[in-house]
Amino acid sequence: MSADSLVMSIPEFAKATGCSRNLAYSLARQNRLPVPVIFIGNRRMVVSRRAVMALLEAGRPKES
Image (cartoon, rainbow, N blue to C red; front, side, top):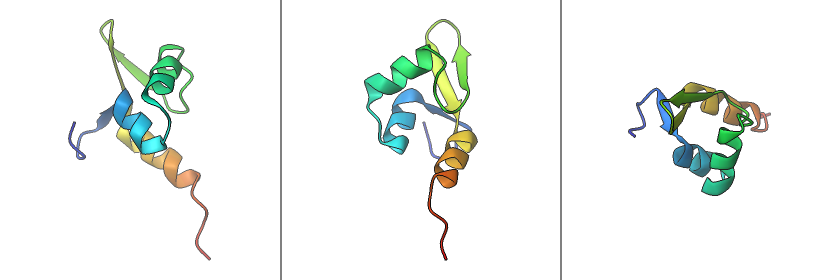
């Protein structure tokens, strides 16, 4: 998916957050990711790019 897409795949989420792809898929299947998982059909899972970016920004130390 492109960087201007509104959603990101689970492997993209894993890369952005630094966790393994397997862990990201496991947490997504259990609906335990720190962002809402969007289920498309029986197999496709994506997350909101905006939600992931907000999560990453919230975890970043503030500049002084």
